[in-house]
Image (cartoon, rainbow, N blue to C red):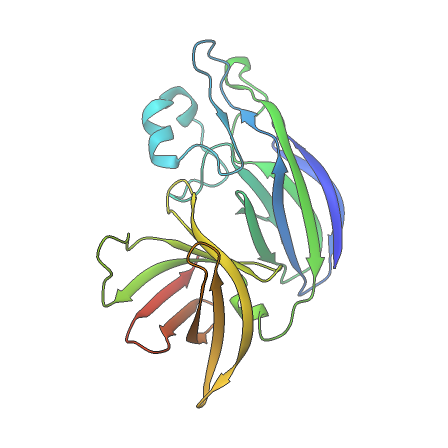
Length: 240
């Protein structure tokens, strides 16, 4: 793996890097430090981390800013959060994300804000210190890498949000994230990948619960289905 460190300025839309991705390469972008202040209102101009300001709250609380359309405006794409440009298209990174380059080319990092420099009152300050790791992963892991949104669960688990994000990263970790602000809910490591009775199997260690669970899985470029070994819990995800 090759690892690089960059500083992403908050007051410009995009920051060039020295990284050029080969076709088919995977890159993990991880926030290390730093915040961005996206509005200069003296009383309560907000500072945000790499996940940005939750989209639904931003459009209510910062109507003047929201008149300008950010590069990404999905419900899961926080305002002034950390972005990467891969294959000429913006992708949301947040605190950490693994992305796949189909075409190859330069990696560019940026801020999810339509007005990073002007108008003056809406200009930004600060920035994000970012670590970038490039590698070609184990072929068994590669189809799982990236961020997925849960679209189905059977049976429904009481007290657990049906709408969650699942991130599987190049460093062999997994995370469940809250949908709007991408706050971490649970995470751990992928301890083993293999087969069982004709099915592909993942063994996931949970740092919070100090337990390991085995899941059979089926994956396509757009969909991921998991079934926990030992009971009937099934979870379906679409690629974000």
